[in-house]
Length: 175
Image 1 (cartoon, rainbow, N blue to C red):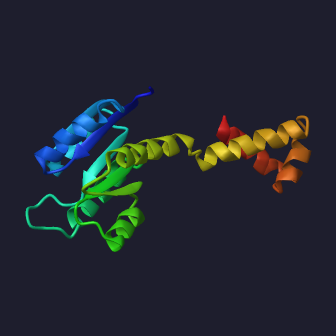
Image 2 (image 1 turned 120 degrees about the vertical axis):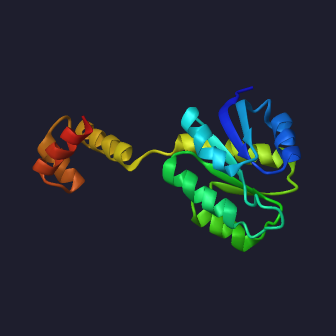
Image 3 (image 1 turned 180 degrees about the vertical axis):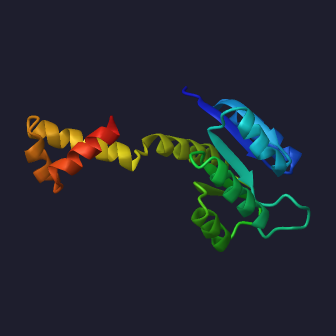
């Protein structure tokens, strides 16, 4: 079975961290954990992390999800390519929507269903690998147009709806 890379799990509950380690051991090559959200960026600076599973509340008695949203924005700012999946015992639709609007890849409620949690994490990472940047899409589109026109750049530019000079400039940038 294919194992995924490294996951960082941030949750203030030691029992959750232990349960996640056991649950995800056969899915991930490396499982990093922290109960201190302040350590997230330090850990991510020390080694590559493929995904973060982030609790929404770290302070006892607080269940607004604002701490998780803060750390989500912080992670996205410093590591925009790293998917973050939110985890909370106080799940509601508005909190899930806020999380997704702030860049979360998915949202999981505690208590979780083991199979569903693993499936969601795999889906997020599989989708991450399928995303093509706009520059890559443009480069592929230009190559196809040039191939279709058998190397005739004037025809390719016309087909793309741009000037020949613009096509030259785009080709230079893509080299």
